[in-house]
Image (cartoon, rainbow, N blue to C red; front, side, top):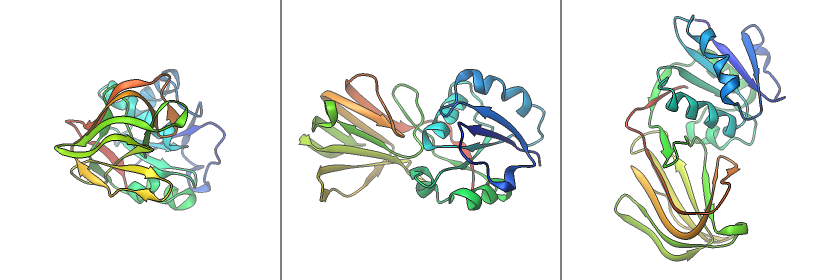
Length: 220
């Protein structure tokens, strides 16, 4: 098996990955970065791309696979220590994640995306403008999460079906239970969505995260 490493920004490269072909990219990979990767992957008998970087970098790569219909490419994540995706999918960090990226097997997982076509791999946090409370109504499938005002709404993928989960935060020590389903939907007068650490450019009135009709391949 031959794999290709995409090193995002100036993150350290684990020693185990040093012998592999390594291609540089921005800290958050751009379309141009990935256009250089596809021809190299097309020559591999097993298409495996190892992303060394943050959750945001990994989400950017998965988003590009989704939008270009390349979900047959297996992805492995070698994250930094602050990775929420590493906890969601139980893949470890640093050297342990690098070993798993090399020796693990690709397995299908629910692909969670939002209504703008952006993939979610770690967590999304939804608040009001300037980090204030968010006012509105949110559901997971047919289960109402809240109506009114809460400090924040948190959304995260599940490693298995049904695919996505969400919970509300009413204060520093008042966090609701996780509720799982196929889709999370929010209606609000003004909500700011932060996906894997990247905030939206402007407030939105509606936001939805849901399980895509096709899975993605994660090396675990």
